Length: 262
Image (tube, rainbow, N blue to C red; front, top):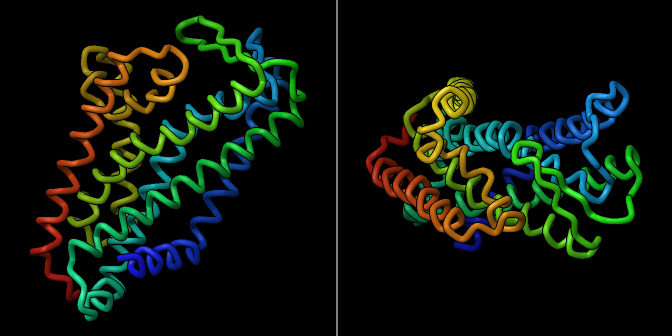
């Protein structure tokens, strides 16, 4: 199993799209500078040490779901088309283990990309706003300011990025399930982007649907470290568990029966 995961990681680290995504993340970190220059930030008290936490919502709601979809398209759909998937199964390994190795490799890459995003936020945020004397995060929607010491703020930011792996993994399981139904990576990425847009649209026009939409739980980091709402945390874990486990189980069943020869 360890060798399978290692092999998947090597393939993903050799994927140019991974580095294109990281460049895009760096470019997105210029948005606060643009907002500062245009004066659109207003009275929001942004400092360099809090910038990564402000940027996290952008990563979770837009960039990371698309990024994950592109990676999964290459891991499953593209490998199916070019025959790499069939080649992997020539060796005495089960399909269950192969799929599990892909999922675990994805988790590792997502963690690395999130940590890279966090560091990029610190660098660009500090260059734009300065480091600041204390950690202040303003929830614009709830109109609440959260103030922490610099050390606590750094821990909260790190914890927020790490705990965000949970909703992203659950979303990834949905995309894995979809990937097993497509024979073209472009179609999968297109459908995934459409899914992200549709979920955001539904959440805006029908508030009653939000508790059932996976993107609603991308805010898990806020419940965990800011509001510290135990009920919200519990509900989030339960819903994300359903979103993650059921597609994974269905994906394994489908993968067992799938004709891999293209």
